[in-house]
Length: 264
Ligand SMILES: [Zn+2]
Image (cartoon, rainbow, N blue to C red; front, side, top):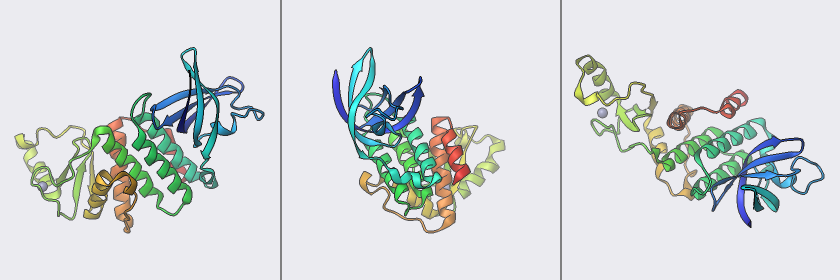
């Protein structure tokens, strides 16, 4: 069986002397693994279209229960990512997150569009990388079923405090007052707080950061990057909260994230 599909190459693994295995996240078939015979040979027509971060139309055939690349054309190679090591590193981390969050035959059209927009913005270099990274992390977490309750403090409903905490594993907000009350009541084993997970991860966020998190979670997909945070400490809060949120819900970290932090 042969088919053609649009997709983005999100991982490349060398196989044998001259072949490679690539992950392609597609609009219609989820994430698929495709063998590229001779894909590392300079003489192969498949080499150029099977590079990491290539978005294109791929002709694929199925043989012995595996997918093989036959040909295709490049729509966007995102060559401008390679101008800066931090751009490549961030793009690689977002691709790793996308690989983790997708599977074959799973609907992932919105995730792919978000990833393409993220790579485009990283390459362009005008938007703060921390904001692009946070949008991808928090929006994909929300779309993967991990959307926290962002309307206000889970106990008193307030959302006007100068500082509020995102309870990462509980998926909810807690204001400073209720948090300190919790601290006082804890020795009495207050019923109200018994559901607090033992390994609590709390990220302090300002009102502007909370507004940004709400925007990222609820904005239409094509407008999700259309906001700005001016204050450096707000960007730091957002960055910390979005990263903690996706990594704790996935229960893992990524070497590519460590590498990005080392070179950013
Ligand atoms: Zn409260």
